[in-house]
Structure formats: C-alpha cells, structure tokens
Image (cartoon, rainbow, N blue to C red; front, side, top):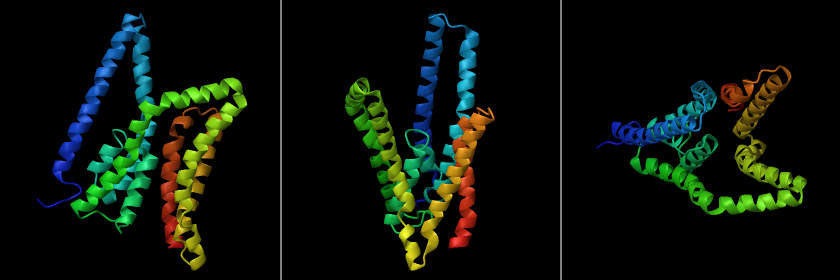
Length: 244
C-alpha cells in the first residue's frame, strides 16, 4: 500500500478516535443536565448555559482550525485534526512538528512523503505531550499544596511564584522565536521573520485588550487570540517576501 499523509485509512482511524471523544462529551453533557435538573436548576438556565458555552467555544475553535491548516501542508489533515482535537496544544504541536521536520531535513511547508518520517513526527508530537498526562495525576496535588502554603504565608510571594511559573513556560516558546536571530549577522535575515510576526501579534493582542477594557467590547476577550493569530500569520507573508 502506497503511503500518503491524506490516506483514507488515516482518516478512518482518526475519525473513530474523535467519535469516541465526542460520544464522551455527549454522555457527560447529558449527565450534567440530569444532575442540574435533580438539584432544581431551571430549564431556562440550563439551556442558556449550554448555548452560551457553545458560542464561547467558537473563538478557540478558530485558533485550532488555523493550527490544523498550518500543519496540514506538511502532515496532511488527519494527524493535525487528531492532535488538535483530542489532547494537543496549538502552541506545542506547531513547535514539536516543526522541530521534528527540521530534524528530518524537511521544511515546515514540505509535505512528508514517507511513512517513516510521518511516524517519527507523530512520535515526537505524542511523547512530548503525553508527559503532562503522567505528571498531572502524580504531581498536581503536591504542587498546588505547596503553592497554597506559600500563598498562605505570604500572598505577594505566592503571586510571584505563580507568575514565574507562567513566564517560565512562555520563555520556552520565546526562545524558539529568537533561536535563528543570530543568522542576521551572516546576512541571512530569515531568522527575523518570526520575531516580527510575534511583535505584530503582540500589538494586535494589546489592541484587542484595550478595546475590551476601554471600549467595553467584552467579546474581544474571547476573540483576541484568533484575531492575533490570523493577523500575525498574514503579516508573515510580506515579512517573508521582504527578508528572504
């Protein structure tokens, strides 16, 4: 059988997995509705909660869709659809896939032609994200307990510790953005493209935040991420033409 990143067998496997996940979601939704009615919550409140939750999932879904489209050029549609529909993270999956493709000597826009390369990228993406599934049940309670103790002793230091952990996570991705900047000293300015794209996205995110806070456009809080993603990706086109 000839391999292809969009082979029907891959879609069949992925479709089955996602169908199981969707079935779980339906089961939990039905149980939640049943429990809400049992404790006396009005049906109007239940319907409003379901509809508002569904509406607010549109914004994150746009971000995920952008990630699927971005990765589909190299990995096809099936694998990004699976990774970003079940347990994947948009920021992680793109970086992991990009690193794996570069390690194989392939560009991020170059489609994989061999099953070996495809499985390699799949394992890199899977093994990296599966660590969270192992650590969360084993360490989360201990970490939260330690953070709670720090916060009880000194609330200010508790906030500093929490922010430091968040910034540490962000720093890992920022390092990926700046990793090729030094190539500019040798006349290759391609490494500046992700830096400029990041700056554009940051400016757009700040504008969305100001619109939500100053202009009272609260919905911008939910759509700031997809808007900044779309504008940032669009800005990559002129930056690439300019610096390549």
